[in-house]
Image (cartoon, rainbow, N blue to C red; front, side):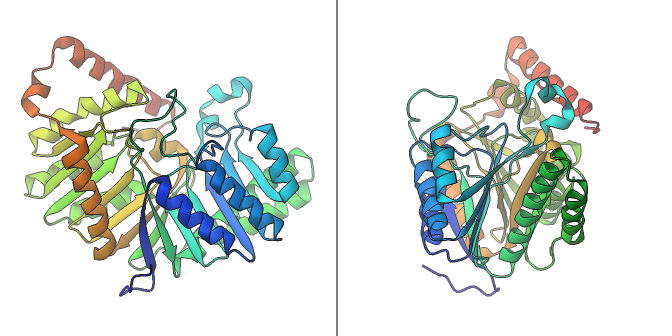
Length: 394
C-alpha cells in the first residue's frame, strides 16, 4: 500500500469517508500510545459509528484518546454515546459550545472546522471530511443518491509532528479556558504560557501544513492559493464547496486565465445553503469572461476543498474559499509538491467534471432573467455585509 516518494513524506489520497474511515480505523486499531481527532461534525449514524467504536477500542487498551468536536457542527455528543465514551476512557471536548443569544455575537462565529487526526505521532490525516457517513446529510431525509464528494490525505513523515503539535496546542487552550471558568487562574496561565511557544509551525520545504486561525494566521491559506495560482504555467483545477473568494484571489484566477492557463472550477450544483450558492453565481460572469471554465457538480453534494496546479502542486484540506472560512473558522490544509498525488487528485476531479457535472454555459448565464440576476446580486450583497460585520474589506 505504500508508494516510494522522492521526498520524506509518504502520502495517500483518500476519497470520501469510505477510504478515510477504513484507514483511520486501521491506524487506531494499531495505536499504542495516543490518538487525537478533531472534527467539525461527528455523526454516530452509519459509518461514523465505525470511527467511534475504533476510538473506544483504543481507549480500552489504555491508549490516550482525545477528541475535539465543534460546538455548532456537532454540539453535545448524544447521551448514550457520551456515556460509552466516558466508560471506555475517550476524552471529549467541545470547541466553543453554542450557548443562547451569545451565538449572535460575531466573536461566537469562530468555529473549529479542521478535520485532523494523528495516531502515535506516526500517521496523520488531514482533509475536508467530517466524521459523517458519505450517504447521510443533516439537511436531507433518508440517504443521498450518491456519496458526497470529498478528499483527505494520510501522511507519514516529518509533517505528522506539525499536525500533532497544533492539535496538542488546541487541546491545551481548551483546557486553559476550562481552568479559567473554574477560577483556577494560576494553572490556566501556566497552560496558556506553554501553548504560546510553538505557535509557529515548521512550514518550510515542499510539504506544509497551512493553518488558519483568528489571530496570527488569518491569511495563510488564501495567500498559499494566490501564490500557486500566480506561478501556474498551464493548468489549474480547483474544487470548492463554498466559493466566494475576495478580490485578490479572483484577480489571480482572471490573470492566470488571461495568460493562457486553463482554469477549471468545480463548484456546487446541488446546494445545502441557498445564499452562498447564489452569491457564488454572481461571480461567474467576471471569471468566464476571462476564459475560466466553471462546472457545477450535480451527482451529490460537493464538499471538497482541493486544488491542483500544473499536475504537480496540490492542496487538500478543510478551508472553503469564502469569507467566513477565511475569516472565522480554524482551518487546516496540507500543501504539497508531489506529482504522483497531484496526478491522482487531478484524475479524480477531471472524472467528476466529465461524469457528474454540467459546464456552465456563458451564453445561458448571460441571458438570465432579471429575477435571477437580482437574487444573485442580493445574495452577494448579504455575504459582503456579513464580511463587513467581521471587520474585513472585501
